[in-house]
Image (tube, rainbow, N blue to C red; front, side, top):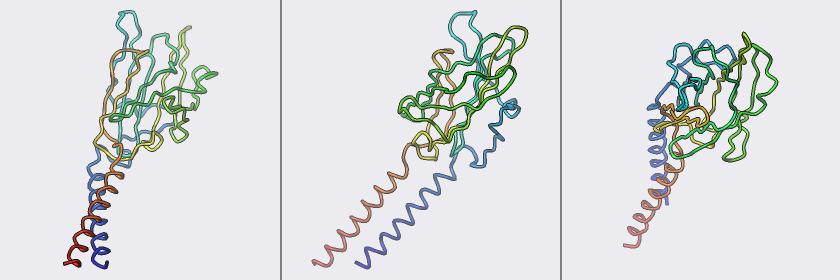
Length: 218
């Protein structure tokens, strides 16, 4: 029994090392190396290239998106007018966020009554599970000028708010079918290394216990 206890401690150490290795291999630094702050100012997004999003018809307004991730969070930016000269209010429906093989359809709540040229905190909802993402700050800014208006949004979504493990090695995609056929993609987030580690621990412990028991029987 003593040997079994020692073996379990060894396996726990290996599991811990394996998890630490996964964390260190993160796509981006945990301290938010992007310098992104969800404050409604949007200045920190200027350094990132925007992916144009547009429907098939040539008169459709060109939108712009940025998708980033570190080992804890997903960062997302969208403007309804990439040129800043179009008339396109905020679209609140069908933001399809796919992490690995887990798909979450995001809806933007409380996006009404935003003052002209002002900002408002909004609430994101994962409609795939009927859950409000209460730990995911999001802000919309509404631009109004010369009889036209458009909006921008920035948000930070922790993997934990989506029910996912905060690690790496997963492809992340945002698809907005109402805005265009294009997608934006980055990497980060894993759907379950903790479960795999626990399973490995149990299997290894049972194997050691079986070997010890057979030796005693002999």
